[in-house]
Length: 72
Image 1 (tube, rainbow, N blue to C red):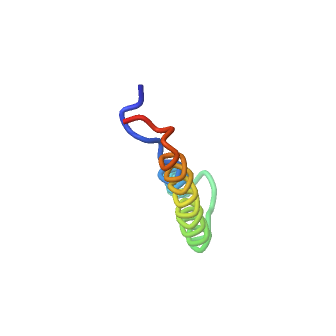
Image 2: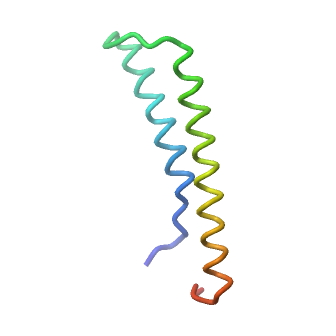
């Protein structure tokens, strides 16, 4: 049994920030060269996508809860 609700927005945000961290780590270790301006769209796009995903997930949970299908 799950102890808390699944929050897909946090999963998407974590994936985007993890990808940014991996790119920075690879750049720091001289495996590849990443321009600094690549991180801005990656992080901001990931956070915007996480916000949309979280809003959609919250809307779905709220609608399912109002029909009485959710148990405490």
